[in-house]
Length: 114
Length: 111
Image 1 (spheres, each protein chain N blue to C red):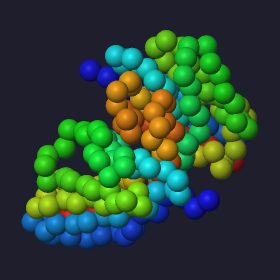
Image 2 (image 1 turned 45 degrees about the horizontal axis):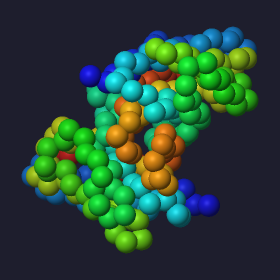
Image 3 (image 1 turned 120 degrees about the horizontal axis):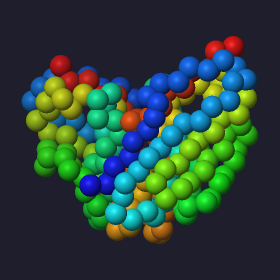
Image 4 (image 1 turned 45 degrees about the vertical axis):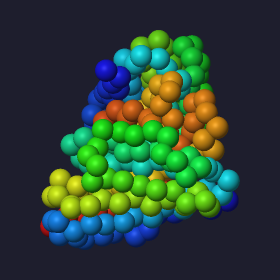
């Protein structure tokens, strides 16, 4: 079974621009979660999508948004980029059926904002 | 506020020198406690899920245990390939897809 795939692997943007990151979950997984990882804050939850609906949301500003498609693939968008948005963005998938869900992570997209 | 704290931040061991990593948590309710391993430039790799106090799980040189307030990851006779950052995370009820992570312990095993 293929793992979680994230594209692109690296991105360089300038302040004020917007960016879209893509995630393909493990086949059969219907839940996709997004996390931001920085050296100072560690891993922080952004949001979770299940069956094309946002089911849970973390404490990030509205500049961070996402969506999920009918094939469970997900995209995350960050508008009006700030220097502090530089981070590793990780996508994780699970079957989403509830209980203590084991998340499977992709390798991430490293975003640098200049 | 739900919180996870890991210690130590960094740990250097000689090959074969056993040790333990600590993860303490304060949460409103525990659905599960997770251990992950993360190598540089990669996403976290799942190791274990623990559900209730007294539970233990093993995989090769790693053994995870859980009490009501903390979890330990015991590493027996580590090898250089065990060098990585080990992350502890908890999931609380009603929070689908959300894991609360600790800051991690970076382990270096020298040959």
